[in-house]
Length: 134
Image 1 (tube, rainbow, N blue to C red):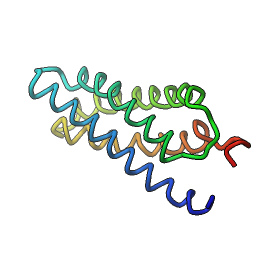
Image 2 (spheres, rainbow, N blue to C red):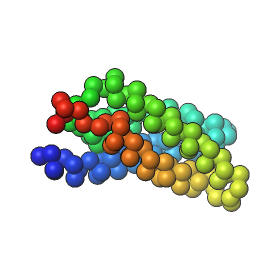
Image 3 (tube, one colour):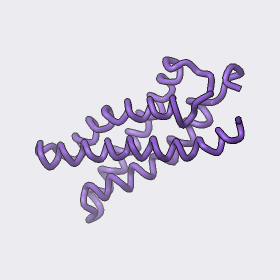
């Protein structure tokens, strides 16, 4: 079972991460197109909305059986997510300023890149298995 769950974890991470990224992306596009927000300001609000989707999905599915209580892993996940937001916002600002990429495409590039770091930190720190989770 542990082996099967280990194989499923990257699949769940991809599904949950894609869902959270689509929520994030959709909020940005809606705020920019319908609310006349700047892409960078919309990105901040979108991160807040996507955080709930991401944490809930990763806690319940991607890293299930890790043995950590939601409150403990939520704090660690918030640190990883906020760090990811800082990288996201910086990279997004750079792409918007120095490339000709349309804002939705630049955001997809940034979200996909930040996801790799989130996976590594989530797997090895946020949801690292405890002895209770083995």
